[in-house]
Image (tube, rainbow, N blue to C red):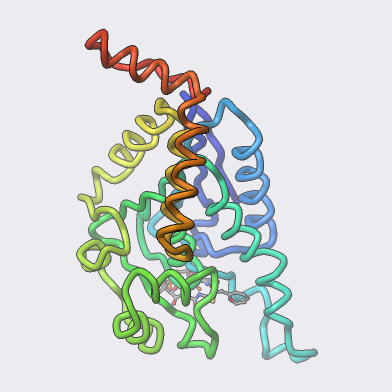
Length: 259
Ligand code: LHQ
């Protein structure tokens, strides 16, 4: 359900249930979480690249998992969120390494919102984002009601989630939901180039930058200036800072180790 490939500091994770548009079952959830936890702990992993196999990126939860026609008690979806989606979202956001997402095709429901939680999102021109939840009576989860409201503001966030109309990749880029929409054929190479560049970067400084940008939304300027001070202190103690300045003075490119 998940392909994992590690090279030159990049952990590439490919959601791999293409016949179901890479919708999540329990096995895929556990595999993805396991690999992201490994990315947290392993110093050799300095960037993560998430993408999908086949023609879709991810169609959210596998709706075949529970067939209401079979009867039985109503499912507790809160438990599914608590057990699977919320830990996944928290992992992506708290991982102090860049997470790049290459949206290779349709991203629906939680699949769209998992993409929006990543740090740099590229999408194929032919990809679409669909807040499919309202079509089946659900609310936008996987952080969607939070990220869409923050990034887009209420008018666009409400229209997208209430209407569940597909949003083309280019519009998502024009609205600032993702970094870039790129030619379909160029997607994987461009995403890998970004991931590789970041994996060769000053990992501690990049991780602290990610944290600061995320915390900005919920902090006031005074608090945030203190946080910048603390993070810059930490960045200043890294070998990569010394190397960066040395490389600048020697007019060469820096050779960062991530320490
Ligand atoms: C699927 C799925 C899918 C199973 C395509 N499941 N098979 C959290 C907590 C707990 C419970 C509920 O949910 C959540 C969070 C959520 O994510 S809720 C939202 C769940 N996702 C959706 O509602 C999206 C459902 N899928 C679609 O609307 C369409 O498949 C889209 C618009 C994504 C793509 O449409 P098409 O390009 O026309 O492809 P398709 O519909 O023909 O799908 C291809 C195959 O994939 C098909 O199987 P089949 O055997 O007929 O070839 C679909 O049944 C299967 N598939 N999504 N989520």
